[in-house]
Length: 445
Image (tube, rainbow, N blue to C red):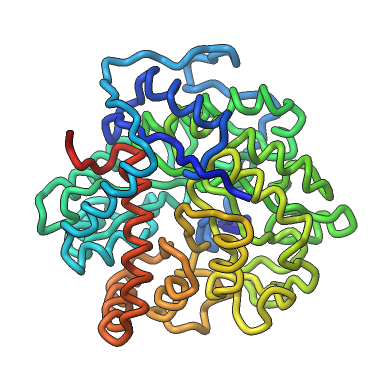
């Protein structure tokens, strides 16, 4: 998401088979790291987040509060076993079989990710995961301590294992915004103080990949399997801090340089994947040229410059080529691409540009549609149906209370439109294919 709070190759990254909360094995890490170097295919914070500020560190942080591994440190070996890496065809066919085994309500639930604040009840949310068949949760609002986060992650994952009445035994996507600088939702013991993207870009791409791997291992230990990072937006030097969502918070790697941003976004993607976490490039097709923050205003959220052939799209292409399995779509407007719709509701942006011109066939996720002012005028149910109709997959809402309304709206639209049913089916299969690769679902064998 904004600060309050984000040509492809034919190969997909291999699946991971770690325990749902435990750290991944060295074999798993090595397999995925190898895939990163060869390419592959495979922000969501609410407005509250903008008010919280993290201290920016100018040096790589330790993987825990008590130790500081060097950049050359090898992945820690565990007793976790890893199955043979499946082919892209195997993963896709497994996802199809899993989708066919789920009830219609369970399939729809896979397309919803809801927010959890530290002040919220994880027990109540676990009950909602089972009741509404939810496919994902995101930590928002600033959490303290890896042990606390791990305990909550375990509780939420356990809700998916209660039987077929819940989520069909398919595990949860558990996400966080761990960009660094002022956008870091998980802090305290067990989490490094991650520097801002501007500082990360001073490390060089090789060192950044190694540091990101360390930071990402901290996520796996806390039961987090999705990082809604890196930011691939480019802010023109003439706009700078006048860009409220990105430039003001130093969330771009190198101002005014899409080629450099692409290199560092790809380095971040590779480091994340190497630790067994799925990265998300954001906020497609870019928030660098707007002045307003879509989380808190509709004013200044139209980008009059970006087009379907714009060089500012290259950092997203680079992140996809590096293996990013998710792309977050912004809620800004891009009249040179689609004069009628905000990006997340635009077939021209999601299907024609991202999936077509850039060749991305992974999971597309919204920026927050729960608390963001940019979409406040859109009825809650339509925020979900319009995104899926545009070609998107996971609807992210900071407000978990909106999930039943969204689920009902999706189901109603499915009853009225066979074409929409096909879009939902395709989205569910993409989400399940990601979960297979993350070890959250399996076809056995």
